[in-house]
Amino acid sequence: MSERRQFVVVGAGLVGLAVTRELSRRGRDVLCLEQAAIGHERSGSKGGSRILRYGYEDPLYVQMAMTSLAGWREISEESGQHLLVPTGFLSFGDRVHELAAAMNEAGAPHEILLGEELAERFPAIHIVGHAIYEATAGVFRADQVLTALARSARSAGAEIVEGVGVSGVEDGEACVRVRAGALQFDCDAAVLCGGAWSGELAEMAGLPAGGVFRPSLQQVAYLQPRSSALGSVPAFVERGPVTYYGVPAHETDTYKIGIHDPGETVLPAEIPFDDDPRELMLLRGATVRLLPGFVEEPLRTERCFYDNTADEDFVIDRVGRVVIGGGTSGHGFKFGPLWGQVLADLAEGAPPALPLERFSLRRFH
Image (cartoon, rainbow, N blue to C red; front, side):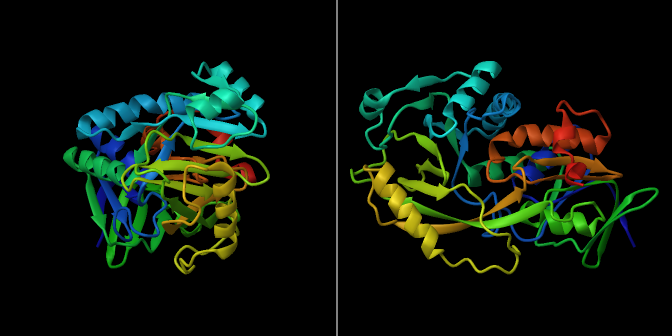
């Protein structure tokens, strides 16, 4: 026997909770199913710090980031928390001129800083040459964001059920049937937001997703400041043969450093979470070279998933009655409110505000 629901969202990470919140605030009947718990260990949205920045080489992404800020302010105000901590953000290395051009085109605030000024203003980070600084950038606490989104969605009437994995998604003539163990739900549209499981869910639903999603397991390390406290160290990304990033983790008074470039494709349910000695060695080398204000040996380490696509563009699409949002490729968190709005539009069959041809699932075929 099936239960009738208007919309079923699969996955309660950032994207799933954002669209669940948006649909419920529009007065829709929404059920969100999460296979484990919100923010679980293998969730791409788990844990600590995520960056909000405008710095992209593509004006569309700059505009999307700027548009998302209004949504984050609304969520923060509603939650009563300061979800975004101002930190500033530095971009340096290769292709910085392309980034500056895109930011200029989109009207994003930034300044270009040179060696001596960089060293004077940010002594904890060593940068050769020039950098683009975004004073408006900041860092989210991912766990606080997930809690705020879930609370907002539930207060608007959404039902979020944890510990229920989906075993089938079938798009029929009259509805989509979502199976979850012994449970079945018939709905007007199903919204798949599976993070590292996006490919598996898409194939389950019969979508043309072969080879589109390439989840990888990333290595990060948390560094201890040499001084007594973290202080006002900005986030950064160094663009080069290896793309390194750093993010202040104020909740633990540490600094997170990682490699943005995705590794080999993995099966998210099966891959062990052991540290990668090679990547830890690279991170130690980057710490010595870039972060004189921090102890070389990590205070702790962590593994996390990236939900990649081949071109690092997102997948935001509707095929029949199935909507999919995935392929965040390690840089999608900042767009959370915008993802929620666009995916809700697709679920309702309304024209979204983004040019979605670029993000079509079918662009790879």
